[in-house]
Structures are given as C-alpha cells and as structure tokens.
Image (tube, rainbow, N blue to C red; front, side):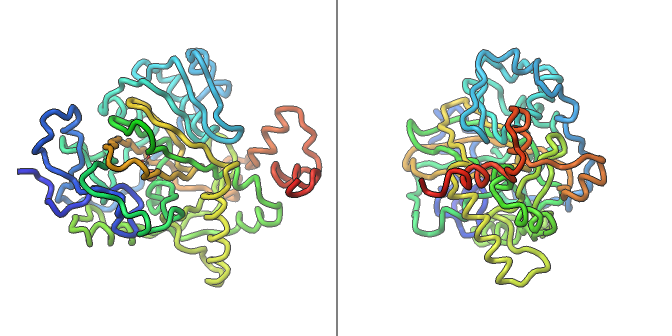
Length: 394
Ligand SMILES: O=C(O)CCC(=O)C(=O)O
Ligand SMILES: [Fe+2]
C-alpha cells in the first residue's frame, strides 16, 4: 500500500487556501514505468523541533568579483533581461570546483536567478551543492520524496485532478520561500525531472529592481520598517488537507528592505505569500503599502523574468532578493521538480548592514549605471529618473 493517505494532497507553497492546483498524491500503483517513482511526493507523519540558530556565512563573499573561473568555463553567458535572470551554457554542475561554486553564489546574488539546461546532476549531488551555500532547510508541510530525503521539497502535479483556477488569485501565488523562518533561504535550486511540452513556466521578480524603481523618500520610509511573515495559513492549509505539520508554525518580523551580504545591494523583502502586515503603522497604511508592493512584484514586467523549463533544466534563485510564482496552465500533463533550500543569514536591515560591515548599502541600478560611466547625478533611480526626462506614457 502507498504510504500516502489517499486523501492527502501534494502541494507546494504557498498553501493559504487548500490549493486547487496541486493534484492528489498517488501511490506507487501504476508507477512501475515512471523513472522517478521514488521521488514522487510523500508526507511523512513525523514532527521536528523548532529550528536552532545556524551559523551562515555567504559563499558569495569568498568569490572573485569578476567570477572568472565560472564564467570562463561557460560557453555562453546570456542575460535574459537587464535586471534579472542569466542563462549559463557549457557548464556541468557536477564538475564545479569550490571556487566556481562560490562564484555561482555571487552570480545568483547579482542576477537574482540563474538557469542551466541539460544538467545530469542527481538529487544527492544537488543537495551536496546546496550544502556548499548553507545548512539545508526542511520544509514543515510540503512533500518530501518517497525515498525519505527530508531536505528535499517535491513539486508535483499530474492529470489526476483538474485545477480550478477561480479558487484563488494569481497575486497570492507570488512568494519568496518560507520567509517566516528566522533565517530564510538563500541560494535555492529547483531541477525539473518531468514537465509538459509547453506551459508550467516559472516567473521571478527582482526585489532590487523594485527598490530601485521607488522615489528616494519612499525608499527611506521603507528602510525604517519591519513586517510580519507568517507560517500560520500554510500550516492550517496542510492540517485541513489531513496532513501532519512537521514543525510548529512560527511568525517572524523581518526588515522591509534587506541588504544582500555579498552584493551590498538593497532589496524589498515582502511577498504576497507570507508577509501579513507592516509592524507599528496603522492597519490601513500597512494594507495600502503592502498592496502597492505586492502589485509591483506581480504586475511590473520590467522587474520580471519568465523561464521555460525543459527536462533537466535547473534554476538557482536567491530567495533574499527575488520573489517567484509558478504557472498552472499545463493540466493534464505531469510536472515534477525537486528543490534544495539552504538557510541564509537572519535578514539585515540597511542600518544593521551598515553598522556590521562599515560599508554603505547601495541601490543596484545606480551602482550599475555608475560602473557603466553614466552620469547618475540627479538620477535618484533608474525607471523614475529616465521617465521624468522623457515624459510619462510617451
Ligand atoms: O513549480 C515551480 O516552478 C516553483 C514552485 C515553488 O514555488 C518552489 O518550489 O519554491
Ligand atoms: Fe517557492
């Protein structure tokens, strides 16, 4: 018999509702021919202690800023948009040296998300690579593989249940992973094992670009704020689907603008999936600010990249500086992917970063223009500065 209760629903996050897009987890029956049957979703009936404080030092801090060893080994380095997303060709992730792994961490930190195709790295090797970036996170509610690897988060959908798209909004699906944790994830990877011929793309949105798009007064205002991130709805969604919540749900307050330890760039750190309110301001103000930021995350195409997966594609994203959202347009096809999720540092506000490092935190866009020799005087940021000169809506 399958170890998975037939009523259990395979789901990834966020599951604020019982997510209709996630199909029931089926047992081994009929799976004999599926090569990844042992990696299909399974919900262990176990519980874990609260997470202890972890020592984490970002590997990007150890990297050559020019990333010569990694980029020199690639046959092609293709930026997919100016602000987010790079595809690397000619690299075999199984062959990376420690130096190249550090450079990959820095590249992901700078570009938000990095894609590689045709990677034969298996899940054990993917976990080992992830461990280079930090101690691995175990998710409290999403499925692990049937083979029992507790540090793997399984993404799985198939024909057995038809999605009901009207049940929740697309905005709610945008998230950064498990931001309610005290030390939320850093350089996270997802590898696609099986996917539809077309559809099932994933989108990422840059928190650096969102920060850069705001006016100086608003940037300063956000830099002084903190927000509450909550695991409660996700845990309740799991319980009402009959699943065991493996670690007690928590709520954590993080800065609204955090600084990436390796790039020193400021990034907006709220997300529709898990951020519930801004602390210490009237509720109406919190609702308005979060709604504005959430809509910028989900609707501003200038901040986004969209990836079309193939079997053996892998994405590395830095959960500290991007949000992401899957699409669910591929039913009845099967889509199966595995995630490895290192813990990062406790998020640092601008003030904390500057006090700790003695450095000044930067606006990514201004910094890049400065490097390109652009006269940035009077340009408080990218989009707004240029639009002012050009006129709106021309
Ligand atoms: O299915 C996807 O493309 C992404 C799912 C997701 O949000 C995750 O694995 O973190
Ligand atoms: Fe996610």
